Image (cartoon, rainbow, N blue to C red):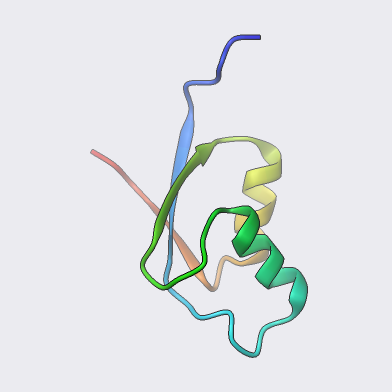
Length: 64
């Protein structure tokens, strides 16, 4: 299998305190656990779904 070249970088901007467990799990799945941390992941439908679930806690970073 060829590795996908498309990636997406997300940065955590909100705290998971007082959030439902599924939102905390989505942040962990994205590789985020502290404020202002960044994680670069493959751009797959599963990753996009996790980002959508916690869109109020993260932002997608555009790398130049």
